[in-house]
Image 1 (cartoon, rainbow, N blue to C red):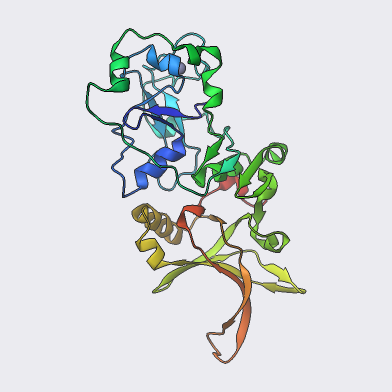
Image 2 (spheres, helix red, strand yellow):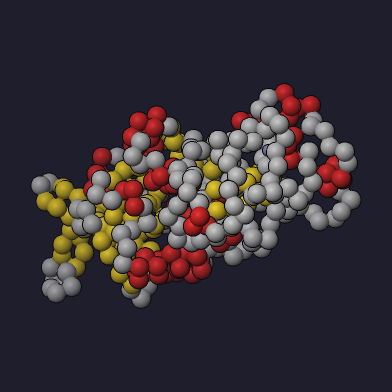
Length: 323
Ligand SMILES: [Zn+2]
């Protein structure tokens, strides 16, 4: 069992690693996971130790990650006996090098719902005499409620507002088709297994309102927008049509994660690696656009304008190659 969540002391809340990433990149929020303190999400376990008993993070700040982000035990991390997280492997050496990790290649915690409204985070008052701080200084015994049932279950990240989380579930478990068929995902009014909620871009006509994904052919940098061209074409009335999505630069300029987003796009344009695009919220439609060579002529293309950058991702996904 991996950490689904960790308790963040300054926010007095349990966060998924995807929440932490979102907070790190959010320019409207003063948050740096390297300076924050994370602890075991099991209340009884956490209360049994002092605030120095911390967890570490993996890929919390890396914009362009390939390997699944997660919380991890540090060599010094302790758990009480019976803590459901006690069996987690501790890194053999004290080395913090992220490349030394060999485990944890899959996201095990599938959110059953992607919330379209962002979660709000409120930083705890730092006044030393209030609430939880006081409790933490006293001799610590598990509270009655938390000892009745496994504390981790009710706090599992059943719902998330971070798009990257279900995307990581899909990408890192792509070779386990049965699992993706089994796990349900709800967005808005629509519920479907992960395996069918994620729709290859070439089949976008099958159903509207899904998460569409596909390999990127090219990203064009225009004055007012970026255009993402997909490699696969859509067949409509026995003819193939290109598919693309537009990202307005105005939209990016007012985005709360502008810097990280531009880094993601810049990396995508320059890296020369195979990249995949995932988006939710719009369905590309057949449009007639003027031909560049011959402006009087038009040609058909399936196209959409991305409306919410929170529901758009460009990333590497080696497991999806040639499948
Ligand atoms: Zn624990």
